[in-house]
Image (cartoon, rainbow, N blue to C red; front, side):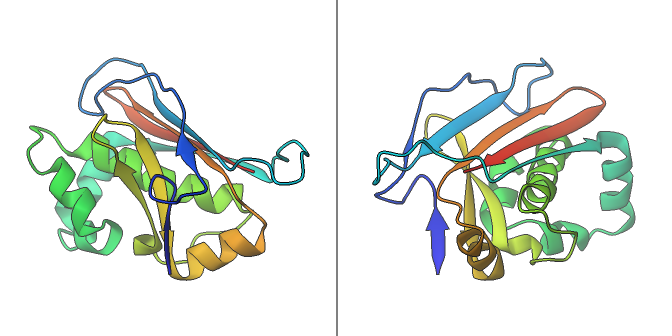
Length: 165
């Protein structure tokens, strides 16, 4: 089962502040996807997660272990960053998104595989989260119907902030 926030008929993306992940500014990319309420009750926050990745440390890890790219990232994520002059900040932000999802669900590293959550981008550039396998099961078990994602990076760090409702 694969669930994508942008592809699901129950979810729609709302407005966003846009900035290229490859730029060096501190603007964030964010997306708010919502499920229309079925009971009239407001959405309840289930969890929040934030993760920050030191870009140079991440770069060193990728250089030391080249196979790490394939273990951590989906083919679509690798294809997205391939044309970038320096793909490491974008990869670091995507890695941070996975970690932030685990934290938002109250789980530790290894709760699901790294290919079971990934970042997708709409044609407009808006990022969203996609889930499959155990990650999708854990999300459903926690009662999550809505995911919010914000990605950013500077020259030094990449960060992801996730809220689940």
